[in-house]
Length: 248
Image (cartoon, rainbow, N blue to C red):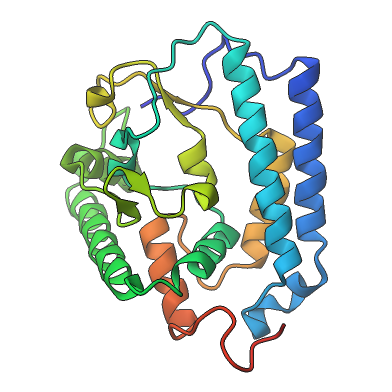
């Protein structure tokens, strides 16, 4: 699958640059949040940090919408289509995992969601091990275990544990890899090699700040959403985000 925006998406016109600069400023504000330095010992971040993340997401959505609307792209994605939600979500920042845990932990069904993520993480790891055990799996298009596992996982087309019917439980809080994904072909092709899928990525300068911040907040951490959420739940010992005794 293609992992960058098609050439017909500019990304360099004045409005794109303005929105990109706004995202960079928000990323810098997130990175400058005082409690970031203490996260390794406290395991906690203030609401202000996540307010900034929400604002960053909104700006990123505007950035994507602007670039699609000013292009000649014939996007096939429609609300209620969940084909992109039947793939492994990879490339999440650590603070996105933390943010999703904040949203999910209080749900009555959180235990079932967590158990399904455990199963997904195990399935993904088995595919990685399969690739490692058989070097012959490597190809020009799939040179790494992660690329191999991503394709095999997509072919299985198992739904994301966050889906509830045809809706994402945390749609407003979905991570960047979910927001950037679009298709030019019928949804039935999205989990196959025939899909013409592409990403409109976070601008490079913003992305560099966010990955540096992500590294500073690692707990340990996996860029694969299932593994990241499972490991953070164990780090938190499954406590609610605002458990008794937590900073307020």
